[in-house]
Amino acid sequence: KRPPFSYLRAITAAAIETTGVATTLFSAEELGIAEASAGPDAPPPDKAAKIRFLVKLISWLRFASGERLDVFVSPAKVVSGQESEGTNLLLQYLGWVMKYAERATVDKAVEQTLAVAPEALYQQAIQIRSTIAKMQATYRGKLARRKAEAEARAREPERAAAAAA
Image (cartoon, rainbow, N blue to C red; front, side, top):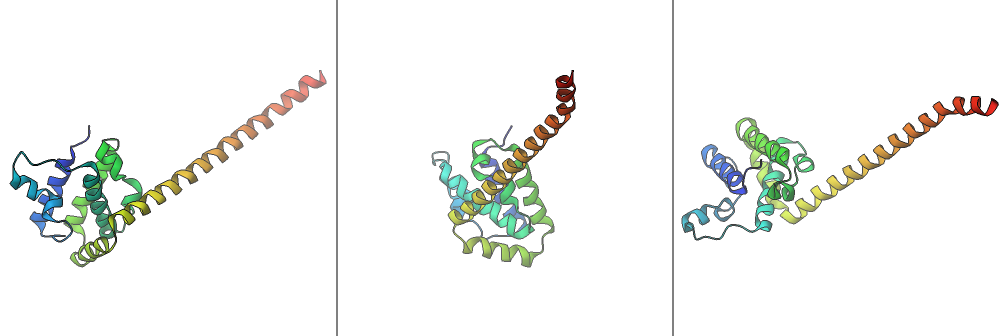
């Protein structure tokens, strides 16, 4: 079962506040601090805002860790609850970066993330995932053809023996 988005956002906000790392990455509004002070009548963030938040978080983690997390975690799927493994991976990377990454690397990652529009970061990740999916489909197709050819070759002696009889 997936955690709600508010849980992911609260963990991120708490990690930033506790460690003092990446304090300029998100605005108070993005972290939900403004909503929390507005009380229970504040409207929840819309799906696009949730995706923008995750795109920024994933991109920052990618730059800070040096790993292509954006290839393995789809913000849209995390928000819709279709990718619990990706959510788990995201939280693991968040913990690792907050605890073990060098401060200079983390600060540079914040600059890199903020220098690129979230839409561009999202499109890059989509393009990479799409390319990987196409490559996987091509490879699966080649494997299926090789298997079919091998099975056909294995049946040839049987056909030859049947035709000779």
